[in-house]
Length: 455
Image (tube, rainbow, N blue to C red; front, side):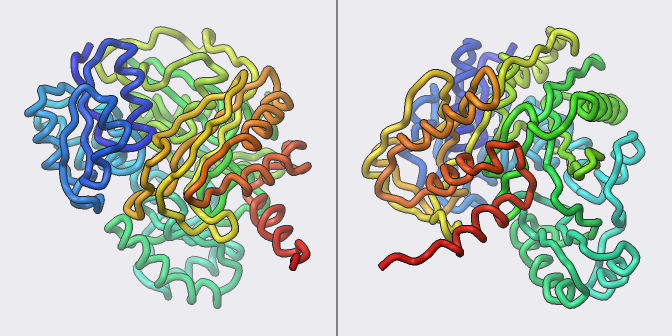
């Protein structure tokens, strides 16, 4: 087992990894930018090193600086968290070349799954159902138009690299496609350094459902049930729950079996997630694979009793999985909401200083945050400032606990999306389990615009 791990990340996920390392008796090394010098993860780690200026390309994406700190501090492994360098195949390769263990899959797997086009091909060969689309990159607008005629509208225009909804747009006509292609390509190039685009059929009123997997280097793999992640704004998740309230036990078994088959065929190791779209008839289709820990991993931990970070570390250290598929029990229901520093009406970021903070408490309530009174939310990083998770013996109890917690979540000095989250999880359609990817547009944005104005 490792004696010291460097966490190549920031915020709540850095704190999350530090917490598990402390439990396992592993020393931790934090890295931080000049903007994060007073952050909680910096104070909680055993050691902390500044690696650059606030912009991520000068700090948290600076591979040379991170590798240098890891070697100077005597860290044996690097946990990348999520985002930033977590799915960077080059970083995984460099870690290996420098004698450091990257806590995640090998660089070849990350590279294969990092391109959505290549991932489609790989998963099709591995037996996963694939959405109708193209498996070649679109070089220009005209090629996109020709591909769209073959597939038919509506369709999704997507960036092959990256995620978070960037470079992604629903297209319903050739006119929309021509207007959207250049802008989405440019955004993909800006965010991911890769403007490769492709198109696939758009599934109306779909559910975004994913399967969490763990696999060791001895050929053992398990599926830790599924998560429903359909409540999204700007194609980015804001509410996640486990298990899904939509799929049947029959569909669940098929999804888990299909995910495990694919994991074994591609030789995957460590934690990963098979993301799928599920149509109204419960047909499921591979969407992408995230080769890292997910933001929403706490809901899986809540219903399984497992510490996913702990098992990531053990697998990376060369240990076998301690359990088989039959050992994994499902206990209750868990729902997570992402707390963003943003205007709840426009979803625009709201940086500033937190002048007051009181987190709700209660049975079944869990927080993953990196904020306190006095924390300054800068414009340099993702505006997510925390996650609120509620567990209950069933979905109704989890919903009730979550609603009460959101009502008592107090934060001042910045705007947050808490009003949007409260309205969402209190909505009759959400309570009924109707959580399609169109929920926010249909039941939040549209209904909000219909509200009468008060003087």
